[in-house]
Length: 332
Image (cartoon, rainbow, N blue to C red):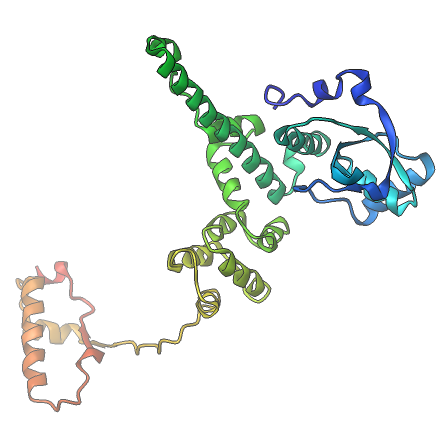
């Protein structure tokens, strides 16, 4: 990721740009698209206690908003813990003039540097990969437009601007995070799940591959699945069945429950009866030279003649004659 965004270099800009100042906690607001889980439980309590004893040792990174407010880019946990510890202000560095992409990368890269990509939750990995894929894909489209404009201006540049085939965007993203292109595609699908299902995957209540299949369902159908997930186990097989049966990604609540429960409104059809005859009976009516086709034809004609003389109420579909030794070897 260093080639795409160097967080260290941006933090080591002119001293005046990194001047630390005290900012009131109530003037700070979380990043609008923050995708990472915050500390809770014992981990949060430890940070609160440390701040009470030592203060906030590392300043937050923020950017200015309208109305004198500031948006946190780095330091959400320190801000939460500082408020819990009773601090009125926290040290912060204010970054001016950041683009939306630069601000986003501050948030993402700082969390990856702190926790490590492999230690992120599945939903967090999905959000990071999806954001990076979108940014890289957009850059690719931008490069195509620039190339087209240059060619319109000077057609002789065709040979110089011709690019050799390279990795797909998903493969490029994968190489940055040590993932295969297929895994990148699956993570992007996971990012399309509603939050309730992402949480189920993070908690390993729903398998990763089942989540990929559920991502093809509409948000309304996903909400139904999330509600029923507490009652029914959502296996990969059931998730695939939901996906296959969904028209335009949508299923009714009843249809979802029928698939997850394995129950339908259709009455169960009675199994046909199986009638066997002895080897002696088989030998009495069929020669050893009779082929399987000949035996089958004789049986069909015999049954047809029999049922022609029976009442109409006789259910022919329930009677199947099976011969234990009736196979091609026996009929030869």
